[in-house]
Length: 45
Image (cartoon, rainbow, N blue to C red; front, side):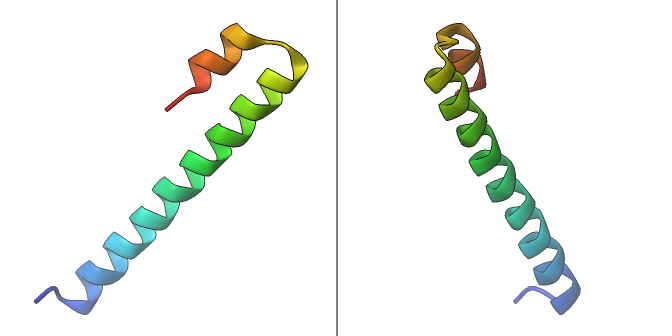
């Protein structure tokens, strides 16, 4: 079993990773709406 400290650290990292993924998807959607398909493709995960 993982220690509480390790579990907390992993949970914090996972939250940061998920936040970043949704942030980049939002930027990608914005670029697509603006017609900047090249930038949108660059932002795909």
